[in-house]
Amino acid sequence: MAEAVWSTDTGEAVYRSRDPVRNLRLRVRLQRITSSHFLHYQPAAQLGKDLIDLATFRPQPTASGHRPEEDEEEEIVIGWQEKLFSQFEVDLYQNEAACQSPLDYQYRQEILKLENSGGKKNRRIFTYTDSDRYTNLEEHCQRMTTAASEVPSFLVERMANVRRRRQDRRGMEGGILKSRIVTWEPSEEFVRNNHVINTPLQTMHIMADLGPCKKLGYKKYEHVLCTLKVDSNGVITVKPDFTGLKGPYRIETEGEKQELWKYTIDNVSPLAQPEEEERERRVFKDLYGRHKEYLSSLVGTDFELTVPGALRLFVNGEVVSAQGYEYDNLYVHFFVELPATNWSSPAFQQLSGVTQTCATKSLGMDKVAYFSYPFTFEAFFLHEDESTDALPEWPVLYCEVLSLDFWQRYRVEGYGAVVLPATPGSHTLTVSTWRPVELGTVAELRRFFIGGSLELEDLSYVRIPGSFKGERLSRFGLRTETTGTVTFRLHCLQQSRAFMESSSLRKRMRSVLDRLEGFSQQSSIYNVLEAFRRARRRMQEARESLPQDLVSTSGALVS
Image (cartoon, rainbow, N blue to C red):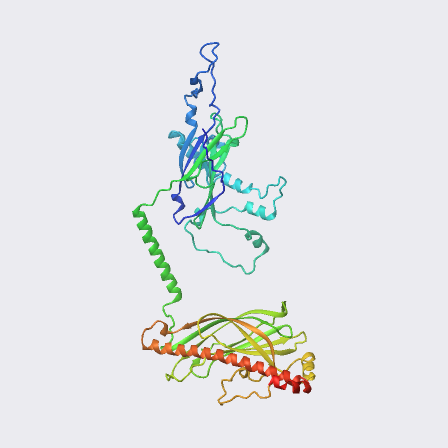
């Protein structure tokens, strides 16, 4: 009887293995379910007898003595790229005139050896390896669509002509890439030949000859039982998947005598012995050790450490965008100011930069210019004053936003400043900017037609300049206007021996870092107070712009 449960999932399955693929073993079992010999009728021994003897249903021996039930089932274990000849190949290669290539002559010699040693061990099940013509034709004749009038495109033709090179030529365990990774000046022929995938791949087909017992060796009776593909990364593709706990697969032949076959595919690869596992473990350990030594040789042994009591600050930053400005074609000039005491930077370090000119695009009600301009710098903090009253300062990032028009006229769009984060990690900072203005319409007309406007001679005047030594900094008489914002993305790294030492030096540096964080909190409070001052200044400007009668009637409310 046929199996009650058939496996209908004939899709491919993908596996990954670190073991050499040569250890792969598959057990294929093929069995006929319905046979042309199932109803073999013979007349009764006595004439006129209406009943048929049950013995007449038994398969009858052939003239050669071979019984048909021996051809009903076949089971064989196949290794990776193991060649099993079909009856068609045996008949073909026995004729020397049919041999054309060195591979054909090699197959002829193997077939002659098999004939001298008693014949081949397989009958219906055979294989096509990666070297056979069937693999090339199967890849070349593969259709991309189900249309009957399909016209192959240029890419399909190129992919059909690409022969995925065999692993034995390039090495299964990987190798060193000797070709150039990047071709800076590719020719047209180079582009046409290298724009398709050419992954090293090996293919193997497990086939079955499902023809009648006396008609083995005809191409029309060949059927694919399983297709195996292995690439250089150890990825194994099996189509269909191993049977496992699922039901067997079925094949129904076509023609006058339709027959039903079932087959199973099982992975019977031998398990590694304990001695082999231990040897493999030692090999991997040695390999990883050598790789570690190789990486150490690339890094070097002279890892740069900071001096005791010092903090090293790395900043990988990006000028992300600017929005809310009046004119188009913006660019940003920025620089980092280090405090005058306890901070320093390498002589080669550049602490300033200018972005490219960027056109704006509408985003809601604002116009945004996306710069994505990267910059990096490093600085050192060396704490020398151990008095608890001394409050360390932190570097400040200043920015100046300018616009440039078609006539190369530039205008100052805004100034801004922000204290760098005192904690390591990723930070996104939005800097609000302002610009100085003059009273009257003449200044605005000059700014529109001629370009140029009031500018700060010292950009550090946006905050408290580092060179200021007085007690009070007066900005009396400076009229400003709030403009847009600039977005920075900063990735801060800090390096210090205090992070890994458990001595008094660590306690000393820890207190410094605590005070630095206190300075950051103080800076936040300072920003809040600055926001209140700006709001009060705008309120005063609005009050001055109102008519005198409204000011007199609402003076009590405004005050």
